Image (cartoon, rainbow, N blue to C red; front, side, top):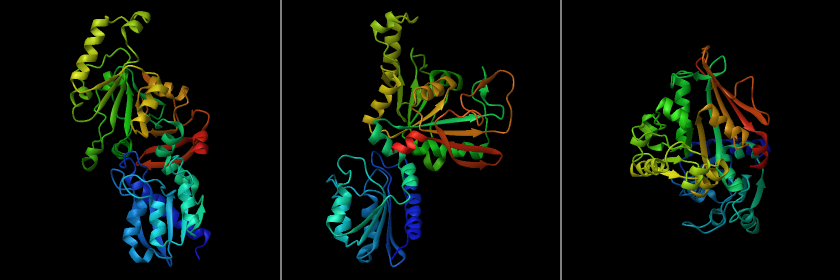
Length: 378
């Protein structure tokens, strides 16, 4: 019989396995599954790129006949609904699994306890809640979209040793070294969408794509908050809109709202800008309220949003209570005069966030903070 320590050790491996396909499984969660027989791992599976096959199906296929009488370790409750493939809960039953250890129940109303009940009804011993906190963090993107109808929001900031994001009027500048920047590229590759404000877009003219050669095809959907549609057609974002999706959020610049807000641009010019961006391949949205925007992204199946650019944009997300995780990179150099003050620094963490992880990249440091409320909900 497996001990509690054994269960935790196998579940930790299943969670680590699930993270290998983070951000690559579409609207499905990236789940890890191990099949263990007589103390030996005989099957491994992780939700396939694109979302199918599911982890359990792959692990059972690898285990073959050795699944009979074995224990399955799964990071998320096995599905109970018929989609393109039969339910994973039924597959575990059919394979002869004797015991199933599950970290987190699935909040999807099509599953939500039904998968566990299928297993129990078949006489399979079921244990739940093993390493639940670790599994919830690994599944946070999916769980947040399911429970809050919005993507999980990560605020990424790089600050200098004196708490600055950069120097005013000088555009993009390197705060951290190549190792830390490589970690940011991986973070982009794991995210469904990335967002900046128009100030950052104009000052830096970024691409916001993944630059790591073997992950270049994993660039996230790019979003720019641009109330007055100032993003020029010559911007790199617009020039590449045909290759990597670009959404420009214009905050409802209809003719009526333009008059009411006394927008300086002529209405005809606003319309022309919108049409030109659309013709260039960008999608223009006209309701820039953050709650509305995030709900709309979730309805598209976007589970994670990386907020990268602009002190004002970062503060807006923080003020709205929409940040779930802060990833704070700190470089060793100071910026000094004319520095742009960061809304978050190692000495000024917003209330309601708990430190969960630290990592060094050469002389640069990464600290991660999770919203305590979010951890409790998901």
